[in-house]
Length: 469
Image 1 (cartoon, rainbow, N blue to C red):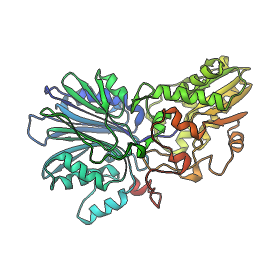
Image 2: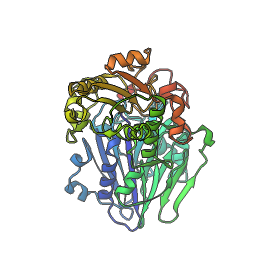
Image 3: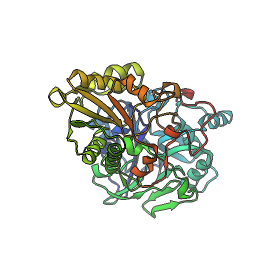
Image 4: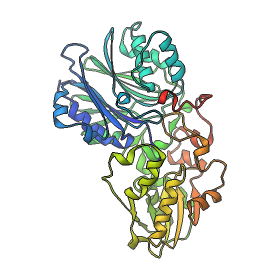
């Protein structure tokens, strides 16, 4: 499975209530965006300026935070983060939020995305004496904001100046002693939205986190926009970094796989997007069969769409073990391969003697797909037809998704028939490239991993894995 880098969450309670437990629940709702490490940083806006309390650890949100830990995190403003490393070691030092103490006070920063010019910026900073504690590009962003803050009237102005230097994908939430700031890169690769609950404002990667804590959705942060939240002025907006709408490049994979189906990303229901993908697959790659099933969880909505369009019954062919925990989620090919059986089991009663259409969101290396096809056959399926709710991956991603180098992609230099043979299916069909903009109802997207056409020139060297990031 492809992984996405992170989820971010921030809240400022203007009434002065403690926010740590709310951040905890917000992060639980964003757990699907990263299961490797997590962290919460809070500050008391009426207390000593610049005092930040934080706790970070490896593992899942409910493993890393106990009631005792949350009680100690007293503060009315805070940020939280869940992380999956797209490149770079999964170590405690690399967990976020990053907390920086500097001349003007304290900054805590949570970042989702990937910079493409991090190595050059890092060198530039190192030559001016910067000492790095982590191997993540988020620290480069934090340093630039801190450095620009020395010549700026406000933190948000410093964020704007830093944005002029950094290139790539970033949704940021920054906590300063008296303000909560959200910023989204000009292309809008990764989502970021604003919510409100009573007298608190919330920033989050996805709307499902707002629902979980009982906040109402206010609006999305626009690509290129910086929003500043404070009790004096509510939400202030700076759109000086925005670019024309036609140049926006949302990651289409947010809709196909990353985001939770109950989220809305830039006004589009993720659930509806996946239903549409399934419908288009049924139109473009029909096949006579008895049952349509999804590979849980990510294939389920598209499978339902395929069933609706084709009239073939939708069913369940797999039982998923939801309690696999972190041992499963460690990145690394060896672990991934052995984990398929631990995580899924086929339902013999559902598939025996039947022709099955199996829908998944993507095929990356093909190792998981061939095991799942085999699982269905061993459970007695007469035929297994695989349909994929995205086009074939042909190019790596540089913007915060761990799609690997081309030579590791099964679709690279292979025809659909060849891939079909490798995974052992009776037939294979992918979503057509031209359907991508249709499943997001015409919104501007980045589909570089399918087409090799990126909104920003990719780095000349493959930097994923640079500094272990």
